[in-house]
Image (cartoon, rainbow, N blue to C red; front, side, top):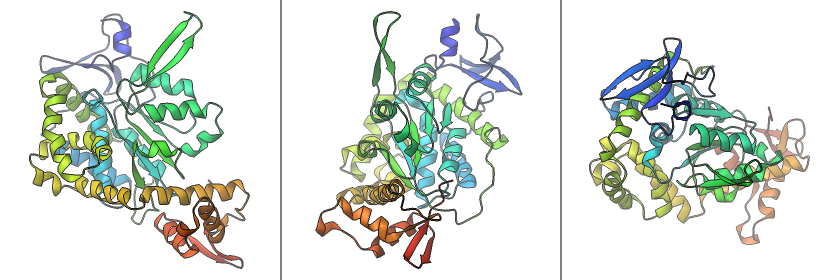
Length: 401
């Protein structure tokens, strides 16, 4: 086995670098059993990787039990609302370990004001997703090389700062196109005097105070973040014993299902897609939620089992919002309006007048679709912003830290 195959074990589906009781090595799945090796052929484990390593694979009783444990871990560290957001995030994390099973994937987009728990959600997803890499300052070259080489799950924090990055257009193009299998980025390599195609397909999560691009909204399941209403642990450490054990169980899940090629793609699509069609007629929503339904496939045996599932409620909520005013767009526009106010220097002593936000919100709308400061105030309250009364009028507290 060559070093290239081991180092790029995203392409070699029964090998994964692990941390076995503090010792680096490889977990190998062969003939239904797991073995640990310090070396494979001429290849040694990498001394450092940018994701949290799994331990040796750990057997789990069932996929349903594993999914419930992931949901419990996310609930422990994050305060999300509505409740079905826990089911979305747990299924997304679990599905990321089965990237090979999908022709397209969905992104998680956590949107909210500073202090609303966006980074904490990404930390939880990093600890539980396949080769999760969390970063806030990225370059085009680092992203596409990480995805191409290691098939990482990219978690991008403070994504609104991309607008100030020199190659922001290239980074956004990776996000824009990387939700479909076969998506590539072409670069010219002067050394060989030819173009080289880099794969950019993979699960991704984004956290921002406002959305990056309109086109990305169609690739994302939005999670609207609010300030925590219950106590959650102050720190989340990826080497936490519970989280490490979950990665071990997820690695076992990945190895076993990847080995069972007969249970894969077409058979599951033929069984699960008709269930999704009963819940929504929106083909884009079916495409977005298919990986999440796949992660729940063992507990979804009929139309009734999906219709009563929390994910069905999430689909219905998004379906209705798309038919009406598209609630993600409304909140997105509010966040864009706040961004405009900051650019115009309208943040004073950490406060922005709601009237100023309303003016920026209405500026790009036709007269008949303009809203009042009271309506904007309602959106801001839902998003978790604290409101204060000043001599100039009601304002929100905006801490950029």
